[in-house]
Amino acid sequence: MRVNVNDFFSEEDWNNVVNFSERHETPFQLILTDVIKQKYEELRTNLPYAKVYYAVKANPAPEVITMLNELGSCFDVASIYELRQLLALGVSADRMSCGNTIKKNTHIKEFYEAGVRLFVTDSESDLRNIAKAAPGSKVFVRLLTEGVMTADWPLSRKFGCHPDMAYDLLVLAKKLGLDPYGLSFHVGSQQRDIAAWDNAIAKVKYLFDWVTEEGIKLKCINMGGGFPAHYLEKTNSIETYATEITRYLREDFGDDFPEIITEPGRSLVADSGVLVTEVVLIARKSRTALERWVYVDTGKFNGLMETLNESIKYPLYTVKQGLAEKCILAGPTCDSVDTLYEDYQYELPLNLAAGDRIYWLSTGAYTSSYSAVAFNGFPPLKTYVI
Ligand SMILES: Cc1ncc(COP(=O)(O)O)c(C=O)c1O
Image (cartoon, rainbow, N blue to C red; front, side, top):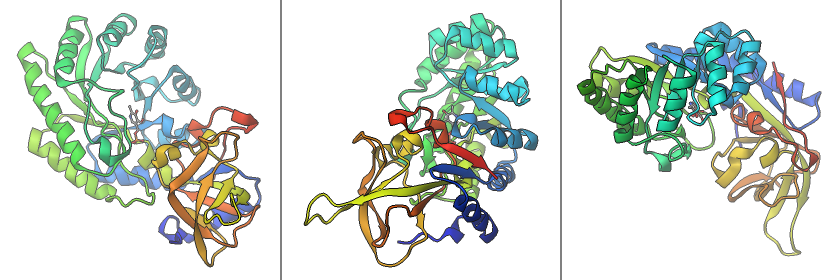
């Protein structure tokens, strides 16, 4: 089915994309900051009580950070390298949280010395490191979540801990002189089942009550990310997510619920991006082969990492129209892992040829930020911002 760009961009924005693209060599990512601004405002309107900590890892382009900083966003920071970038851009440390549960002692110290006082943890040894290198800081304990099957990019198992362990860590945090501030979770990125928040919030409530036995009064819920971008697979609107999540919070906490943090990455920036690629080659593997292989100049190693397991299915737009046929899409490197979609077969026009462009829509998140190495000599994905 042919993608209608009007479902993704205003006419003016799309004209800007095409005009810009025609003057630049592929591959590159083009980010439209006005789309991010719109997404930010939409989130603020629908979750007015939540403090937004943008997950920098989704797209660390300086223009994106600067704009969100000016709009009043806070930032979820994954490493000292992101920390240094944000400080250089003038973001103040009291608007950052260190959201990675896996970190070196020396890195915790650097966060602390820069002025960051909010840390997330899910293990005893990390908690002890925080107590030493960042004394007195506020800590969130991250919970394991369910919903793996309904998230297109799951984040469970590697992060978070069972409620029993969370209880022990909160008690230990208090003993170590830290401020057991709250609980955090991430229901998985591009989470299509809103009920995943219901389960997570219920666990949080259980722990909020349980730790009062130890004289601990938690103050905040960090709900992580998980809100959707506009890909091929259907999702509910942000408004519906917000309405349901607010209902879950009310059911568990009443009207006077705790401070709420949200850490959107994908939902803020994905729809602002267009990845412009060029067809390098079209081939069939035998005289009678039914499948066409379409190779483009961007693959897993320079921007399309989230095609891993065909997890994220981006909407594709080609200028050429007419009779379309299913194809296998692959990247340009000498690595067979660099096959993008084979089970899911995109239908592309039969008259598509080498040199034609394919516009990958909704590619503003987790594309350029994953594209940091020059595998096979192909340079990391270039980003332009308009
Ligand atoms: C701790 C944390 N918060 C927020 C996010 C952003 O999630 P999303 O892109 O689903 O909004 C991530 C993504 O990896 C994360 O690890």
